[in-house]
Amino acid sequence: MDRIKFAIFTDLHYDHIHDGIQRIENFINNVRGAQVDFVIELGDFCSPKEENQFLLDMLDTIGKPHYHVMGNHDSDLFTKENVMEFLQMDNSYYSFKYGKVKFIVLDTCFIKTNDGYEPYYKRNYNKTEDIYPILPDYEFKWLENQLTDDSEHYVIFSHHSLENKFAERGVYNRESVRDLINKVNQAGNKVLLCINGHDHGDSLKKIEQTYYFGLNSMSYIWFGPQFEHFCYSDEIHKQYPGLKDLVLYREGLYSIITITANGGIEIQGMNGHYQNITPKELGLEDLWNGRSILPTISSLKIK
Ligand SMILES: [Zn+2]
Image (cartoon, rainbow, N blue to C red):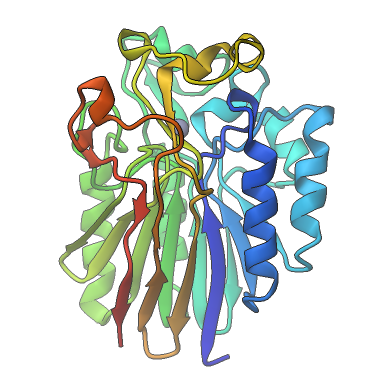
């Protein structure tokens, strides 16, 4: 395998918007012809209920494996076990290999309590004074082991960022994780890329030898009730009460990423548009939660 290509999206939030199905449909139609090896989504996908099974069936029609990452909202109404069962995950953190590249999926949806770690469940992260999100110490050790095999390169996926400093957005122990990554990279350019969702913004930074890519949401930016606005029909707003707090992107944003045998990275980004209203019209600038909220996904090409 001299190159591995995958399609990626994050934060669809299917249950919170009126047009999630078009976004997934559009993604599938575009990815079908792209000859990817696999598809991955980085969490906050949909509630793990039976009525949403059709979303997974739709992803099946691409004819390639699809992988999933735990997002904080996936367990808003269900347990982590329910989410895992729905997404057919044996473990909430795991890895898989294509050729000599290992892809590592982290689960950062934990609260650090006095007695250990509590998984996210029914928005408990909104009600705690404890630390979150965090990579538990046992998962950290697992990651350390994962990064010491004979793979030539690694790509790490997580819902929360390993570099975003903005309050409670990035993984709490992100600096230790980055130290580990830098240590692994002393043996060469091993950890090429870390990709996260959750921030609903676009960012791409290189720290030491590794790129940290904050993938924009497929759907929208959340601004909250202080910026409420009604730009859809009454019927739609009634069915999706949270829609008034969002600014939707017109296009369903996604990316196609290629990793070459010698560690090259190609990120195929996107330049999209806002749908019915822009943040500027609400009096907002282009940054939110420390991220660019332009309806874009950055591109990158390095050999
Ligand atoms: Zn999230």
